Length: 135
Image (tube, rainbow, N blue to C red; front, top):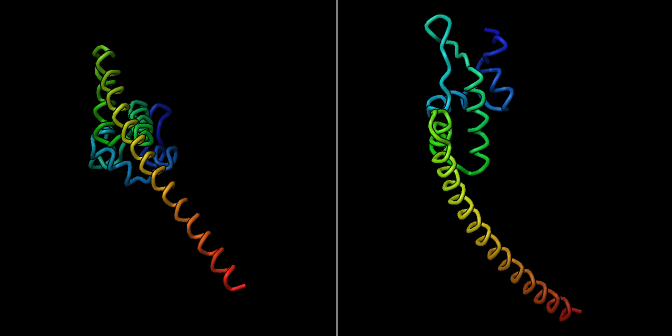
């Protein structure tokens, strides 16, 4: 089914965002996308510009490290006509939590890297001694 200029097929969006149609259906199951249905038995999904925007925001949230549930909560808040203050506070709280987790992971990785460097240095010293004693 060709999409009109204001709607998209599952293939259109999957191709645009480099996703599989299976991933698109998963996002729908998670409540992130809500396409209309058309065709025999409602088999064809018809995505609106709103769905496209929600998909774009979902993928951005994933890149930031948010879970799909967190992404849906934040995106749903933006769909509501309420004041944006609570929405932004929620978004900032989620971002702060993820920033803290990433900083902890970075500290763990740095400690691991420092330990690897120590072992490399020790191994080089031992190798140099072994080669010197053979000469």
